[in-house]
Each structure stands twice: as structure tokens, then as C-alpha cells.
Amino acid sequence: MKNITVIGSGTMGNGIAHTFAQNGFKVSLVDISQAALEKALQTISNNLDRQVKKGTIDETQKQATLANITVSTDLKAVAGTADLVVEAATENREVKLNLFRDLGEICKAGTILASNTSSISITQIATATKVPQNVIGMHFMNPVPLMKLVEVIRGYATSDEVTQKIMNLSRQLGKDPVEVNDYPGFVANRILMPMINEAIYTLFEGVAGVQEIDTVMKLGMAHPMGPLQLADFIGLDVCLAILKVLQDGFGNPKYAPCPLLVNMVAAGHLGIKTGVGFYQYAAGNKELIVAGKFTK
Image (cartoon, rainbow, N blue to C red; front, side, top):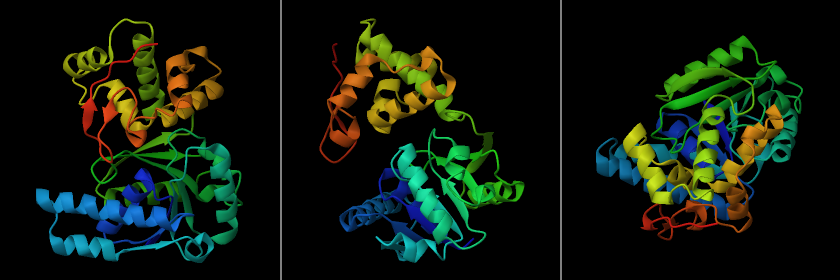
């Protein structure tokens, strides 16, 4: 696999493109908005600058990485020659089904179709194509260039050959892939999201404040980031969407999203991406400017 198409230029999409390009792959980054693509390229360049500053790469490697990335708003033009397509669009089932329906018609025989979904069924996504054996999940962690884990999710029809190719490819990217089966939330979010939801309930019920809850988990459980700050980092809208997938998939009320989370998303307080969540953030970056003080 030499030619990679990444669909979606947001945080995950540009991170995935960055990672492939830095490891010598030719990457076409696709989005419906040229402005979004230009923003993504700037983000990738800024992140590479940080790597240069830290000494993990040099200026020559930075320029080579950028040279490996092209951008396009024409999915049909670039996906048709891809060996692998990685979808990193919004965490919405219908959006993904429509994209994979199109990819099933656009892509050449043998192209592997991967989704970066964090919770939506790979088996369901695969039914939108005529090649379910070629559909697989590649759930990268954020920030993609730094985080080692890739959850490799086998759909019901995913072939052994495709699974092995993606496991090997993930290792070529310097990642540690873990093969999991296709059940709601897979492994990472089936465990993580109930913990985050319980932390939100702990705040909602007045047991402790934002900083106190996060401090307990950081100092007592050795978590590098408290669950409420982590929710801000992920995006509260994404957390809500994943919890709904878990609730629908298992039919169990223990996955029901906390009313506080539902209200915050409705109010547009989505975390870092909007500058306010359980904490407030400096414009355009992840730096905390106001510690969390939230009430019902």
C-alpha cells in the first residue's frame, strides 16, 4: 500500500494524514471545504514545527512530510487510485454509510476501506459497500502522531488477509495495533466513556467540583489527565454520540448520558473546540485559562 486517501481534515483526519506522510506514504487529504484543507495543512505544519523543536525530526524530514501530502475536494478523483482509504469524517452513522456507499462504487478492486470511527459498527458500515470483506476499523487515538495505539476492528465479514495487512501497516507507522471484534464501543470507548459519564454524574450530583474530581483521578489513579478535562479534549459532542451508540447497542440504562452532558452539548459547550466545556480555554489552543467551576 503506497497511496493513501484520508477523508476528513479535522483533528483526527489531519493527524492521520500527518502520520502516514511522515512515514513515507503518499497521502491525499480530502474534505468538502478548501478552507478546511488549508487549515489542516497549517495545523500539520505547526505540529511538525513542534517535532523539529523537540528534536524528534529535522527540517528536511518536515519538508519531506509536507511534500507527501496533497489536498483535494474531489473524492472521486483521488479515491479511485487509492490502495487504502481511511475515513475520518464526523461521528455520524448516516454520514459514514453514505461515504462508504460512494467508496464502494469509486474505488478499484482490492482497495481497503477503513473507518476511524470510535464506536459505530464496522459491520453496519460494511453493508453499505459491495466489498464488506475489505472494510475494517482503524481507530487511531488523539493526538495521532504521538499516541501508539490503533484499535483494529474486524467487522463480521472482514477477511483475515485485510486484517493482517492493516495490523502490519499499523506497525509500519510505528504504532502498536490491537485486534478487537465489532461490538459497541469496541474496547477503548466501552471502558472509557462510562468512566467519563460517571465523572460527569459525580459533578452533576454535587459530590465534588471539576478540579476535585480530576485531581482524584490524576493523583489517586495515576491518570495523566482527569476525566472531565479529557472529555473536553475529546469533545463533549463526541462523548455524547458514543454514549448513545453504547446505549442503543446494549439497551442498558447504565450507558445513558448524564443530563448535564446533554445540556452542555445543547448549549454548544463542547470543550476545547468551542473554548468552553468543563474548563475554559485560550482561543485557538488547549491551554486552560479558567479552571472548571460548574453547577447544575
